[in-house]
Length: 208
Length: 116
Image (cartoon, rainbow over all chains, first blue to last red):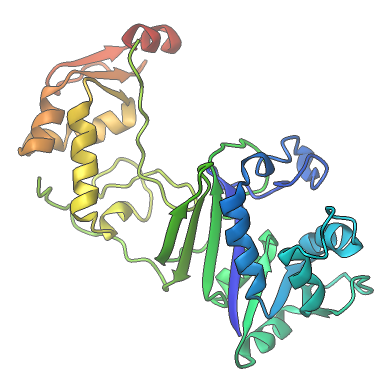
């Protein structure tokens, strides 16, 4: 399957607690809810299209629990029956990469080990989407399992909280395949990992 | 009151250190910016940005890098950078030899507010 990741980040790379103050307070995080006020119709339309084309979802344990506690309860929003995100999440298979989760409550959920993620990806056809799930995304990128990285970057510096990419980690070259901006200034970039980066070795001569 | 514009080369994971190969420090991948061809639009953007500016405000480390580099070059971008007044914020720098450079040693907020 084609493995794609979709992550909402601030300009300083924070991905923790984007939806609300109590979504994720780990590490004393007090600035939850930074993305939602900036989430406009165009971002919503883009995200709805992304969810619509998903054939299956893969989550880390933490994001799975957040999603299961919101989208999975049927209590999110007035018209959740018509919401493309809700429809996709409730009708497609869900996989959770976890060594601790044993009894997932959300229907059509399978718990996987890391090794099994590789096997799932090796199946032919379809798109396997990862939303949120920072630890999992880092692991997938480090193991070269990601085909496409979509970032929705919100015009805000949050100044605390977990970053998508750690201060020190493996390096990756990326090809930009799509880029756009929404009216509220959310920039959406789609990248394809392209192996190790190359680094300049000689001092360049400015052409100007 | 003028505007202060911060302009940075930054990687996706937020690294701003050592974008140029001659930059100070021991970053293992100095010069990573030069893996990307900015193209005509990229070149134009940086040139327009420089031409629209009146003053360069620099920290000590970046100043040391660029002051050792641009005086050796000419052309519209280099000429503008070399000619415009520079202000370097530093409590340790003893002299700044790049054309029209001033060292700002006082309280950072006061000095920058006076500039702006």
